[in-house]
Image (cartoon, rainbow over all chains, first blue to last red; front, top):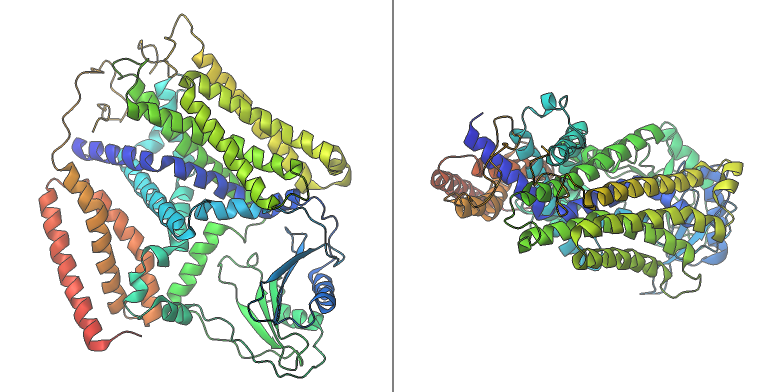
Length: 520
Length: 115
């Protein structure tokens, strides 16, 4: 390959990687955590214990709860528990014009559960494409630009390092610049197909926002386009007279029969208790790779299936699968961990790439003690993004256990805690010498993670010991992952502290160990 | 731009002069960036609309197919913009083919309308 092409691709890789690298780091981190969003939500709602024996019982209990609580509502929606979720969530739209939708969480017995106010793992899922404190539309454009930069960085990185697979076997760890270079290469090669897949399919999830002209070329507005592409179940009219509803258990059984036994995700009942009632049952997205799970509609009184809106088409099916493999809702435990592992490699790839940018330039600074503004900023933002986000996420979990139950806007305060700690870490990185700020913020993150299982054990009855005794593997795993993260951050802090300490071999400011030519 | 001089295998060259010898920025970098981002977005949009109008499947599927493909085209144009020797020729190519496709999309919408 010609040298100029290699060089221009290397530069393209460097600058597209750096430009929104910190945002990519945050997206990869929270997106990876979101593969366990339901498990995280379970940990963050420790009040919910036990579960309904199966979906039919859960649905029957939810319907009887709604019949008692919201008999005259315009519609009910029931999100059923499944393998990963223990809670049943019921929502209803009051019949009064303009009244806000109500939501309750039910426990396994179908009773309204007194659950602490939290956004749980769902927040991490939303943050990875909606961010926070920003209008959602802007945030999604920003995220799209980051994802597009990521795709270009991946392709240009592959062109630059076409021998990357061969070089994979000539690693040198612990040797300054070369080892950052190698660390970036290992993490990139290890899950390269995953990175290409996840970045492209991520763009696909919001494709119609980023490239609306595809739809607008054939339709006068996006609404008409979506109506044809993704037809929704029709709305029905209320008859105005009461009628005995068909038993929900029978409807679920018919739906499962038509789906070869697949589970149900949500049930929507329009005009419950009315002669014009209609039941829409949406198939679980855990049961297919594609994300556009089909919905079956039933007459709410006779329980007979209604004609379904036709939908489909080649592109529709492809898009559904592309979004599906991004979200990984179909993945069972083993594959889910593979998703998480690949995501962690992505976190490491972006992180090592960002650090490598400074490690490589440090050696060329005229005076390493007084770097130029660009270098200074990148170095500090790296600390804020990499160590600070870790600390912030730990603070999010701690806030879930420590904030008082009755606090107004409690769920929002949990989120504020994440950003307060993240912001403070970044501020600390800006004010301290970089070589000190690295070990200090990493150590702070380690302490916060170590505190999570302790605080969990002290503030709830579901600490590590009792979870082990109860065989509650979601809680056990959560606590153990916190311990593991604490260990990872602590050892990173130790390595950074050792590099920061003056030694006869390396100059004080030379974290990468290269200024005197001893590394590389 | 200031990437470190590279050996053929991409590793940093040892003993290369480390300071005081910044290469002058390559000529045309600004034109490459303008071609790779704003011009590319307009070009990819026009090409997406063109594909959405002309793919031989029903309109909704054609629109979606074109939209899914647009990100691959955008990526390819960025890579090309930073690979070609003559950025001027790339500008000429993008503007000419973009204008041709745009004209065809425009007349096709005028003649046949939209759904």
